Length: 383
Image (cartoon, rainbow, N blue to C red; front, side, top):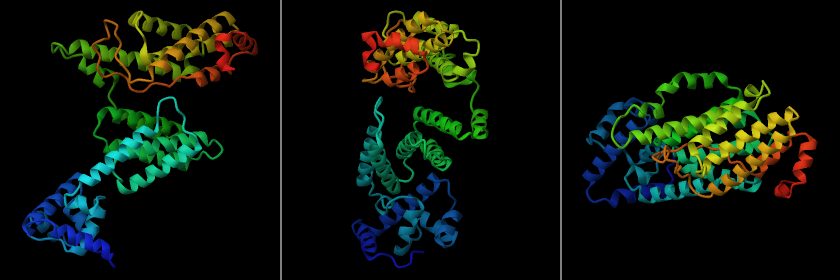
């Protein structure tokens, strides 16, 4: 029960009751709403009754519209379901507009290629925390806050701590659970796995892996079994692009594993696969994959003191980097290559390669190679 109910809040409740024509209608609406929210949250009548300090028979009577909650208990019901009193009574239009504006602002906070500074991080995190206090179950806000906290933790190397990352994990887990967008759920799960890797929580990663499908049963591959006219070409194109993109990600992220033989062949071989598929077509966002493949090939060549190939591969990476930065100004577009142009759902996670990426890789080259690159006016912006 609520003790010392605020008078203004009590007035709002009474106003809501009085503004509805017909008490019977209000009872039906509120009883149905309580039942709807309880099922939404997978709660039993006993759970709600226990939280409110009443009997489960009382809850049952509300939901059957045979009784009506006392006015003093309504705020507790709203708090239990994390909704406003207006929403409990069905007056959710204003709240929905507010939520929509919050989500729109949250999604606009992070733009490709723009790394938020300390001030932006602080302001964004404050805004998202306040928004979540009002809408605690909104997955878009949970995902955005997790992302900003993750970035902040990555930037604050001196202050990086497990507690901060654990909050990021909790937010991503809640966002994943609450999201009804299966494509975004995949992206959220991928982010969650990366943070778990930073935490060294390999047991939880293993649990996620054990609950995931084998690659031959993944969504993209299963769809290729559909012979439905007009869709097979689309699904085959999407599966091929997804597998190609993931192959590039695997060998780029796991450089230490694939570079052990000091041979760039595997990177160049995948480059050739990309070239054979895309042909003369613009690679679009897939320029990112090509850039990183060439950078890692150059890294191996530099380690082998193969100056000519290091510079050759770096130059190609530079061109693909520039092309990606241009392509990333717009939404990802499907390739026009004949064997790929039926694809509709394209990979959504790409490394945003930039001049900063090129500089980081240059830092791995020998001073002699860097000096040669410095002499080329083409790369002046990198120095």
